[in-house]
Image (cartoon, rainbow, N blue to C red; front, side, top):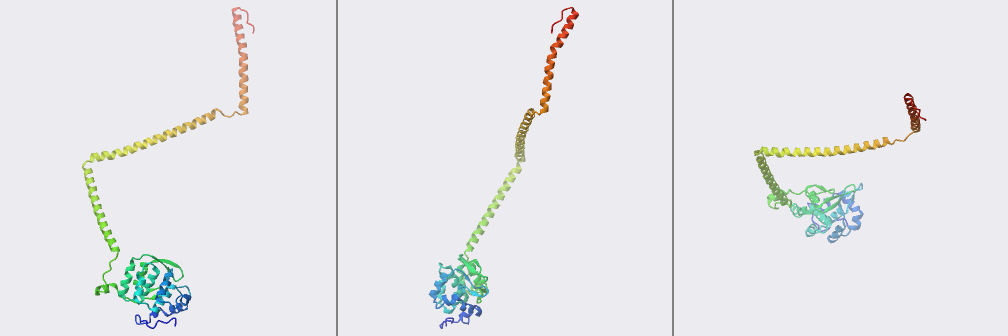
Length: 313
């Protein structure tokens, strides 16, 4: 009794609404704990409360084919079949994004193609993030506009086969729908105008550059003179910098030489050098002692030749 569709329910696409979900997945939902504990005796108002508590969207996951709460609530909506106004209110409210995603998925299953385009296309302007669970139980992030685009373009979402709908251009040709105007069209038009302005500015700049080039070509002497000055200045600055560097190098080399000379002038004397200095000093002393004796002998010889008395030593 708890898994049957309500008595007053209408057939959707010529079949029981619950049959829009495959039997294997449907039986897994009936056997799940969330269905037995949380989805029992739910009404349309209580489904909203459960949708507010949701934290992610998804279909089935794991090796045992476990259904997510999102898929369980979709089946519950198919079972109780709420009014169309309630579902539209699910979609139009902006406070709870997962309730909006639940209403959009349910409308994609049971709605006509005109209602689907009419109520789901405005959600392209919703860029909020949704957490999505994959088949391996891992999570990824998807935006609301991407989710709506998947509902309108794909044939199978969350392992549920979506009913086929007519293309939009068919409804536009029949007059049932107006041509869709995107918000991005204004940005594109603004971008086109900005590109045109930019191209005009570029053409103006090119013409201005050509004028300058012509004016310069008329006076080749000045142009040659202005160009010839700049390399000379650069060469002079380079030569000056080189001279400064060379002077610094010379000063540094000079200092190194002076240091070496000072070190060579005051070397440490060895024992052999000391002995040699001693001998030299002794020789000098002997020479100094012998000098007066020799001088006296020479003077006596000279005095003897002259017939004078010799000098005493």
